[in-house]
Image 1: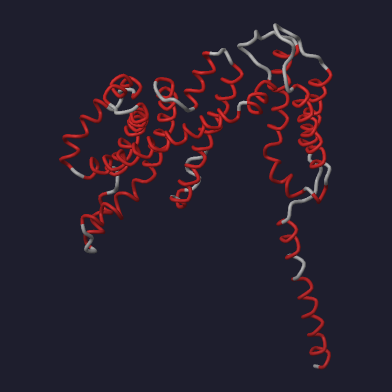
Image 2 (image 1 turned 180 degrees about the vertical axis):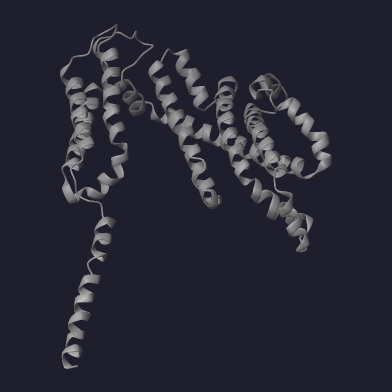
Length: 351
């Protein structure tokens, strides 16, 4: 009996010791492991090759002295190569940052290769004719010297897009809910929407500038019209597709008509509404450029027309790059809003 009771503390201690180790691997897996980032080293080599080629290979002079900001472009590539090399070989000091950059490792390799081909075909060999094609350092020159005009144009485009898209989205959402809920609206308004909705908003450009009190108001109307149709149609489709049993359950619990619209129909139709918002944003962005080219005195569309008139193709490419970043950023922001509003459907549509 004595030997049995004396062995209990020893067994309990051994049991506690055997139970404690499994918690340590979980803690270790929570922190990123410090391993060699091979894609980062390869990216550093490609950026180093880009910088060396830009600095050591002289530009081909075609009709003028030389491309400006060539040395700055080469030094930036060398700095990026150094930063990537430090991150790749930094060990535990840079493990967390490498963990964030690791999914983009292949793009960090492909980007300097694309810039290298672009630089060789334009500045080094001159195979692509100037001034229609400009090397990468020409964009740096535009951003460094013409940033006040380009920044002001971007701000004007954002303001115009915000006014037009917000107006079209609001009216389209309300009309879509009205058509989807009311039989009278579905009978009278829906055929008109199907008949006039597919007409491109840019086709009404002359009428809009004739009847509108100002060119800015005409541009806002065209952008709102471009975003109105997809938002209204998809909102109507979402409201009309709501399961009727939801309404029956809510009515048995004493729900009013307004409760059925605000708490049942609209929440159930939100996935379709966001699809319409994505489509409307793309359509309004294309109409934005067209409207600014015709009558607005500032904006990215106006900047493109101004650069084309002066044969400043480098400025055109710089503005197109800003437009691409702007449109992609707005769509990404809209997806963030969608994921927050529809967290129960997160991951169904990705960008």
